[in-house]
Length: 343
Image (cartoon, rainbow, N blue to C red):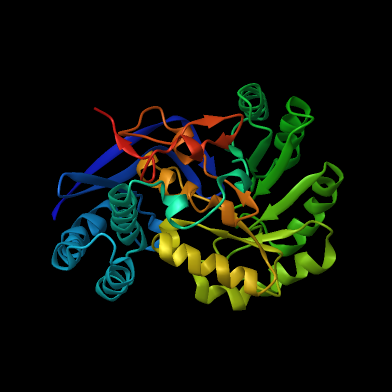
């Protein structure tokens, strides 16, 4: 099997701000696997929050690709995933890049889309939300209005500032009929979250994602006990092993390939959440279609999707799955994941 990878610094359409900071670009690694003339493509975006960087991913990928070359079988997913985990347990984005490319290659070898290989129903995949990052209220309102005009009727609003009410109200006024979720990215303490939950609930917010720091489990429990808003754990629930710890403190969890390590770990986390009676949102970073497209094939298993990472980019090195009115058209994928390198 021939293997290779390339690094790309991709610009975002608009500066993307959350409670922890602002970015104008995103780091994207694209892995290419070729066997007997069939090519698989996957991607990974490292996050400093989870202990990775472009340098760390570039350092570990050759070792991980050696695992794939040694096994030399795109259908040996379990064996390869186990070896990748042992080889690089602290490199989830790097493992995700390799595993998504392998999944694409395996499904293309079988000449079926990945969701069909797994036996999933594309018609039950939820539409994706579109994220409105932190900006001045008028700018957030304009972005929300543009998203709704483009067919997105689910919005995720980033908050965690000293003027959240004005920002939220501007978005709600600009998109009165949209379903809105709020993500504070650990930007509040429990008391602040409880106070803000009153007016968020009155404005028909669907749920509140990670309002307090990931290690503040008591705060997360307090918010759930004292507000009517469903609470979602994101940074507090990184892998399947975290689900039991957060299960009594939240109503749903966010699963991301880049934090858990790829498609198989994501499946494990989804099943663990279900076993604990939790709903699931499938999320992402600001990423290339090289990693968003594979994630979309898990969408039939979850309740909510936030897979707009590639839609926030000004340019991409990969084409992905067509999106219409917020819904990914999995039926348009002839084989593999739908990620294809731009010629």
